[in-house]
Image (cartoon, rainbow, N blue to C red):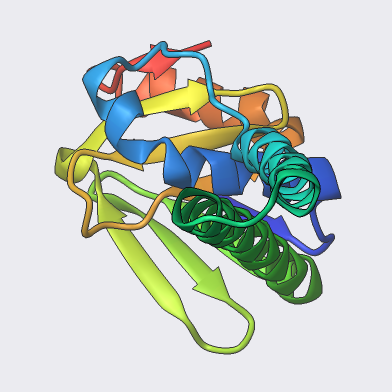
Length: 177
């Protein structure tokens, strides 16, 4: 079976794909685990760190600077910067995916699923290395059982087609809906 994907995915689709990538290890341990939203978590941590930074600086100006307040300001500033850097990194990956999405061909056969990009990139994921297939709210993801392999995701609009093919040709593959 071949699926030719011409259109780009939505922003929500790519956010979910990134969250799947960052939840990979946890998903391998518990296949039906709820997906953590790292965009939301880092945004909250960045805001808390920034507010805490302002509060500590204001208190230090009001009560005077000492070694403890300098160390506290430095630690909170480092935490805030790291959180904002992670958010920026997530957004760059999402933007890159949005720019380069679409023009993809997925080929399903008895041996593997093959992901081919219009620019010439081709990745093959053998069925014996697939841990499970899971339908998320925005996408269908084919999750490998090793961290060195690629996670293949496609829009949930293609899910019925893929799930039918899997039930007919690869019934041993665990599918989580």
